[in-house]
Image 1 (tube, rainbow, N blue to C red):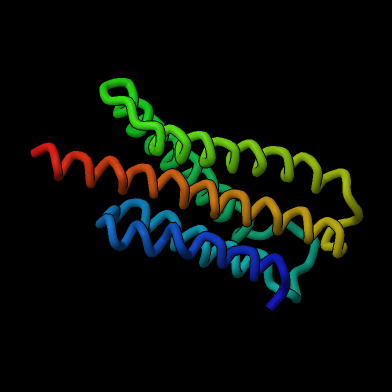
Image 2 (cartoon, rainbow, N blue to C red):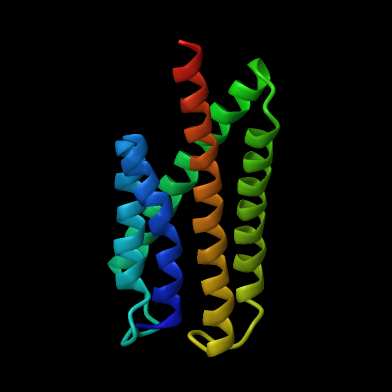
Amino acid sequence: MLFLQKSLLFFLPAFFLCIRLKRILGMIILLLNFSISMIVHRGNRKETIELWDYIDKLCICLWVLYNTYLVIIVSSYLNKKWDLKILILLILSLLGALLVYYFNKKRKDVGKWRSKEQDFVHGLMHISGGIGSLFLLLAINKIKKHNLVSQ
């Protein structure tokens, strides 16, 4: 398994938390992203654009939209009820998003396609995204616990 594929494992904790939180849409989006990215980042990959690349871009867009939706939920909760832990989780998740953006820009400046340097930076992008999604879902979990207690 290549480093790019191993870096995708950082999305699995967020996937399992979606299962625990019964967030079906999140489970589907994260599983789709994980599965398609494993195919796109396979070892025998050629530099040509394939159908899998378009599917991968669609899955990434769905992941970004889903995370945006979660950010809106967390933000609206914080607007009603202040919670420092939830705010910190939100900030950490947004830091993950910023790192995804940074590493995405940086990988285009580092080495040739599929060089070790470029794959390393691309892998850091996956790791940042997986951890950012996990922090966001941890904030959702904390909100869910607050709502259960207050009802």
